[in-house]
Length: 171
Image (cartoon, rainbow, N blue to C red; front, side, top):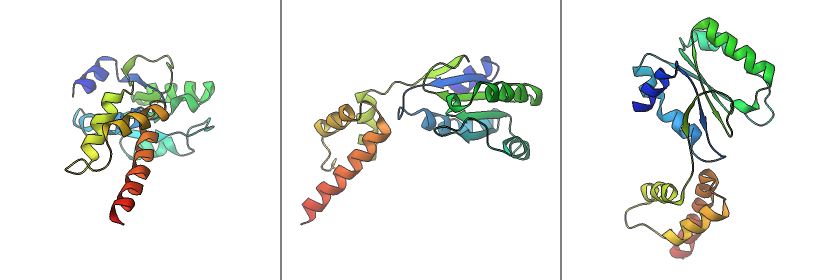
C-alpha cells in the first residue's frame, strides 16, 4: 500500500530497477491487488530479449481490460521510438506507466531491487518444508554466490540440488 501511495505521488509514472533475477517481476505481481484497490487496474506487458516494439494489439487489449496503468516488464527492450509512442499513448489515454528495467531509463524510481544473501535465505526458508530438509545455509550461500546474486537462477539450482539430495536419501 505504501508503494502504491508513493507511485500515486509520482503521478503514476515510475521505474523499478534491478539486475536479472532480483525480483522486479515478483514485486510488480505483488502490487496487482493494491493497484486495483487504488483504482489503477494494471495491464502488464512482458518484453523479452530483442523485442523492440510493443505487441501488435496491446492498446486495444488495454482498453478492453479497462486498464489505468500500463506496466512494461523489460522496458529497456523497447527502442527509443517505441518508448516515445508508448509515453504519448499513455498521456493521451490518461494511463500511468510503471516499468521494470535493469538500469535507469529516465523515469522516477519507485524501487531499486538489490538481491542479498539474507533475502535469498529468507525466500528459501519460506519454501522449505518443516524440518528444513537437506538445503543448508551453506548450500544457499554457495548457490547465491555461484549464480552471482540472480535469485531466480539460484532457486532453479537449489531445486535441482534438493531433488538430487532427496533421491539419494530415498535410496
